[in-house]
Image 1 (cartoon, rainbow, N blue to C red):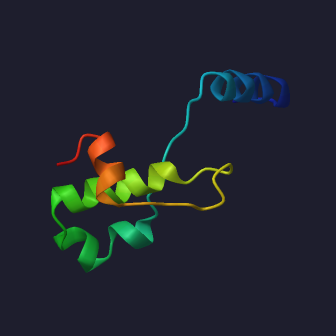
Image 2 (image 1 turned 45 degrees about the horizontal axis):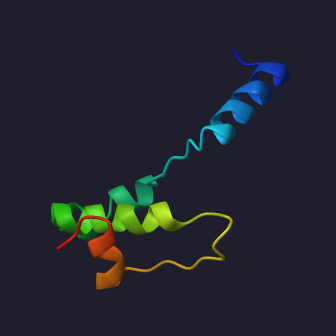
Length: 73
């Protein structure tokens, strides 16, 4: 179990290394729309979610210019 000191040190290491993750809530995963979507659609959803940080004021884009820079056709 992590104590305050250990969790604080862990946070500093993860923050310094730029380690981030994207959560997908069960409410999204259980939706029929999500389950029936194609793999590229799910990948796009995750790609948009990755853009969400506390530094970009919620500016999320899915335009062709952005997608080409990230390996999309």
